[in-house]
Amino acid sequence: MSNVAHKEIVDEAPPVVDAEPRPAPQPSIAHVAADNDGTHVMKPVPRITIHAFCEQPSSGSAIQRAGEDRRLAKAHLTVHMGGIPAAVEHYQQSPTPNLIMVEARAAGPELFAQLGALAEVCDAGTKVVVIGHMNDVSLYREMIRQGVNEYLVAPLHPMGVIEAISRLYIDPDAPPIGRTVAFIGAKGGTGSSTIAHNIGWCISSGMDEDVVITDLDLPFGTAGLDFNQDPAQGIADALMAPERLDDVLLDRLLVKCTDRLSLFTAPAVLDRDFEMDGDSCESVLDIVRDGVPCVIIDLPHVWAPWTKRVLLAADEIVITATPDLASLRNAKSMLDLTRHARPNDNPAHIVLNQVGIPKRPEIPVKDFAEAVGAEPTLVLPFNPGLFGTAANNGQMIEELEAKGKTAEGLRFLARQLCGREQRTPKAAKSSSIFRFLSRK
Image 1: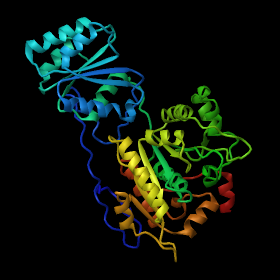
Image 2 (image 1 turned 90 degrees about the vertical axis):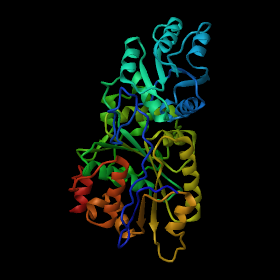
Image 3 (image 1 turned 180 degrees about the vertical axis):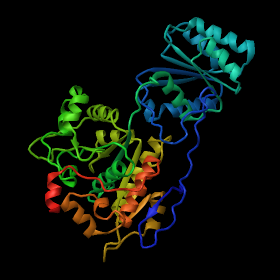
Image 4 (image 1 turned 30 degrees about the vertical axis):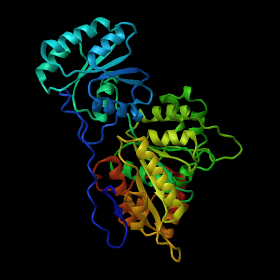
């Protein structure tokens, strides 16, 4: 069982366990000063063709695993054995792809002779990455001088391969993209939307970070209710015509709650039929994340191709469950799916909500964790008064009880998702006139 950081909100909360370290990606010798703070978010690689020619099965396996990553989902990757000689022979009869990756155990004049032969059969515009077994800066510099685009040192790690390819095709001067955090309930009624909205609030108010909450439950979404907003337009307008969405239209469709928090609300009407499409969702979310550091994705509890696609493409995943058998089964299924489909990403977070309902038989937290194979990141007790008051008033938990244990737990989860420390929270003011009147 993984030893992930978690927090249980009880009278005496246990100490936080350190998060399990992820294997460090193998860096190129030219990029040893790459991001180490865990907050770097790579843009997906565009639709390119990649051919790899390896000499060792382990290198081919690492590249193959990299090709299965969500960040290379649009690229077409094939792996061959034989190294540079096999690549030269292959391209004497075939055009070269966008990117060639070749492994070479040779060194010195023999290596550069092989690279010269490869250069003779390469088409203009083809990029070349060499995988070597010598961590030598002078060798790297000579390769760059002769036209090699990147040099990686074996043994390879999938994330090192992904980062190297990303650097070749993503403009380094382009603005960074925002981190996406997808929230989904293990079953209906677990409180996933409530958790999502409160986490968005915590990040915006406690970390001084711009946040957009996107409500993808078009017929029944509650983001507008939870923040006392009733906009005439929202995310449905963007999803119906994603090709028209730009920065100007996005600003008009977003609802500004605070200086740092905006909403992309669902229409929550039943007189319209909504045909959700994975491509449309991806296009809209890509435009949103280009403009803010953090995008909260509130997914409905439905399983369809578009929800699966959005969920697996997110940078972080939060599964909200309750301590019952249906939640346990579904949470385990979701965890197994995400572990298999996202081997190079952080594991999904489990929030165990509504724990301790009087007279209701429950699965103990320890047994729940053992059954799903993961410790909950956050355990929240049943607190109907607090959550009910917040929902009816259109307020967040931090606004009602900033110093309470529930707010403390939500801030803890926000820190885990962002990989950052949170400053001392201060009350953020809502722009909603409805909230002002309710307080009056």
